[in-house]
Image (cartoon, rainbow, N blue to C red; front, side, top):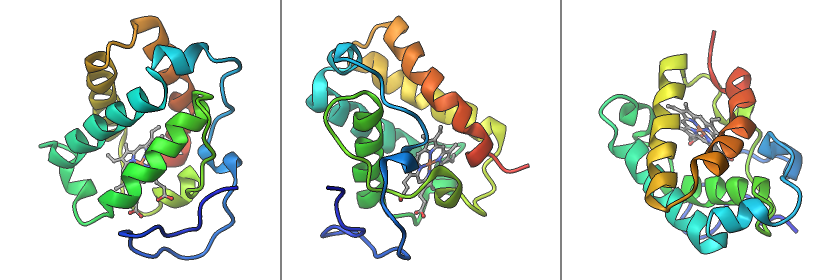
Length: 147
Ligand code: HEM
């Protein structure tokens, strides 16, 4: 079952109904993508590198400043692990509510993708597998970017 809304070390958030549907994409079938990402341990390292880079980023870092990094590390891990079919449920909010009123622009989206590509390459994920995963995230742009 999905985790409760706030885990130890996290700030509370307004109540919502957890569901894997909130992850914003269907999971891949089979274990090919999970293996390409190094299983849960590889996904954990990728998410840590990705989150670190986003917070330290000279362009988009200010959007992340003052947001709950502990929660983000957990929910992004769950989301990636769920979509990659590596054995997780996603217990976070849906993409529209998570990014509401944050003013995210297309350029910010491009930047976050670059940070994710860096993190995946550092873990040795093949370009084919990187692009398959990015193609699951790309359609979420409409829920994340404000227009
Ligand atoms: C496809 C692209 C993206 C995905 C898959 C994604 C995924 C997520 C997830 C899973 C959460 C956590 C939801 C929760 O707390 O319940 C989240 C929150 C957040 N995202 Fe994204 N995100 C994307 C794009 C972006 C972009 C482009 C930015 C800004 C440059 C951004 C900034 C944030 C911030 C600051 C939060 C924290 C919200 C809060 O503290 O309430 N995200 N995102």
